[in-house]
Image (cartoon, rainbow, N blue to C red):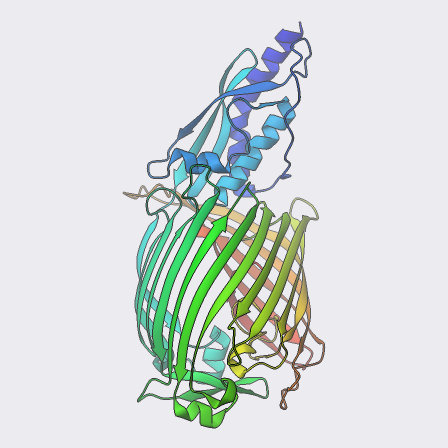
Length: 484
């Protein structure tokens, strides 16, 4: 009788598990639970564990089987109780979607014999090659380009970018870019996550060289003071880096890196700011050693609705009087579902540079890359220590798909859209021992606002935000996605 009940229950699961997984493709929700295998098998119990006999992969024309299996939290021979097996299926689907290799992933039961089960993983691969024209504004963000430079097309870079996100089918990424216009630049990068049989060690190498017609030579009133030259290049740069990466399990990544940088500026830059580099030099060269650890336990990395992420970086730039800086940066983020439609996110970032006495080019803090406060996009806040906290409450407004006609060479049959409304608040502080009249330093800054986030195909996230800051200013800002 126990076996008949088990048989009927498992048959029902075989029928519904593909449907459940298909529904989760759009929702990307559910608890990310890892259950340990049950020790011992009691065949006389209705709760006896099932043994994974085989894992079958379907739909991967380019991606190697071992790359897919690397993300799956179970293997042949593992055994789990029924509920644990279902949770492992969802965990596997999330991990595979977070590789950014697939449009859709379904993990389901294919069949069983006694207590032995066969699992099928069905994937729809993305288009991996993107040879696209490159068009990018020179400013730090769109708002600065519009408000400070009147959206001048003279301040844009153009060129060609070639990206292959799965070059050999091993989740390796090859990027090449050539840029002309306000900046002339050549970039090349290759990243391979695994090169050993155990699939734990990988590497990343890159090269970037170019020259700019403008440079921010100082910060005045927390705005960029720019030397702009249409006749000559005022900044030359070269950077090469090599990384060794390590990923023992699934959620934690380690990077050990070495980089070499050489850059120079025109004599005019040094005249305008003798502290741009140390001792009034107009060129500098230095090595850099760094270690980074990142942890991701998220349902969907580009726009999480549940889970945690953290990152820690320790770096050492230079080993002489010209360049000598230790930097420690820590980032953390948590997202919790409030109900089926709402989520709450909190994040914090802190960074410290030692010693405090640093030349201007080493003082970048808020206003660059992913280090920014909403509502202060028009400002630069340099410093050597500080951080910020952010809180966001969001709610799903719309969730729909636009079906596409069959397209040759791609498996994309629809464009998904998820639209969220949100409210948010920020608080931050940056210490600078020599603020030089920059009034946003050495004080606590606050901001808040509301906005709309749009998530669509190929992990593209765009954010439209209306923010207020503690200076009594407000404005509409446009952002791409960033985790922290």
